[in-house]
Image (cartoon, rainbow, N blue to C red; front, top):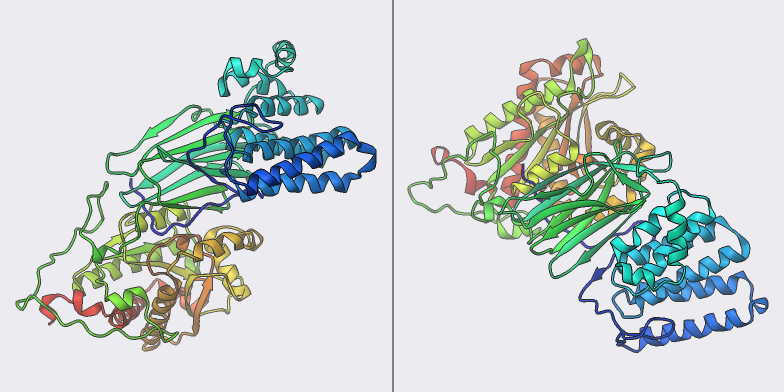
Length: 590
């Protein structure tokens, strides 16, 4: 199966620690307290580090003169250095020294928060700066801190030292031999899941020459860090407090030759840290976000700027589409006049409008399916059946009218995860994405038609609809705000809103010609199925299954035809405004 995605965006981190690109780090040389042989360059980072080191020595020499705040300010000084200069030669020294400050505070006052911060910084050094001379020491500091808390996995950190670094490097740490002797006498610690462990259960992926989506399925929430390594290009994701399920340890997946993602590797990097590594021929940009119920970490990677299917020659893609490509012969004249596009609602022209891009591929997404019935309405009517019937009718109507390819996320009663639907659209270079649904409400009196595009919800009803379609609580949905904000930076919001408005206007008009419905308007909400779409994408709620009258209408083929006609007219109006309609009309209609 292939996957793809378009515009991607940069690096993110969780745990309040940035994920940085480690490009050509050269380790070697030194300044106090680091080992010798490590070259230094740049004045700002070096001066900041020397100043922080001088402060550290002063606090060490006269501990009675300084209070806790002085140590906390010193930790912040070291943190500022590696935040600001993550690839500088003193960055790893600064991380190590911040960890040492918190370790010292823990020994002085015994506070749990200091213990945790010290552990986090030492682990961060080991994972983010694997070539640092401080690596073995940091790893053994974690072992010592775990032992202080009687955490049985402390011994695993000692025995892992030669694997992560080398026996020679570990032997140079003064306390290593003593810890190794104690670790050998300690009962073995199984790397299984416990009450404080998340399990990485599965990895799914879709890939194409220009886009990749990887989904990490976990048993629960897990803090994570990401980073990019170059030459060759690798993106890694470290999952803290996470162990691998039985089928995943040391597993790798080799991808098809066409994919820019070459392989996926997974392993238990530390006793309580799982690492996923993605090997690429080249990485342009990437974006990471989280979906709930179940907990998933989604990684989207862009190889080259997104281009709609209508503007580039078709690429070979693994898998087959439900509908074969239509005949693309031109009319007798061979050329058609392209109309000037209309300005959008803000009075400007989007890229699509300016270029008059041809629409060559439309994807219809019948909501729900398989074990997910969606809403249940009057007489036991299931949303999954209604949406599939409408999508099939709409596909046939589009193919009769326009010279385009129509794909469907499902063409039978099967379950397709929400993140997979968007991945299918991105990987296949789709130009428009329309997700079809039937609405529901606890208030049986509510009825009407509404159309959504991706943005944060502006009213409680929209949040309730998004929560139901995402199969999560509204509380969980509120936690998505930061991810939605990041995703919107590369989503075609303006075009999606335009498409939603054209569809809503014509859908209401078509249905009202025979059925008295309400116009509930165009709204925005954080729908999972629209997240990451690299083309204009909307979600249409055609009517309410839970309303006595509309629930009966949805089962009626005549009503479904009205819905299809409205969707078709809305699409036509949008394409005409984009300057695309004249490019796709079949020759028989001209």
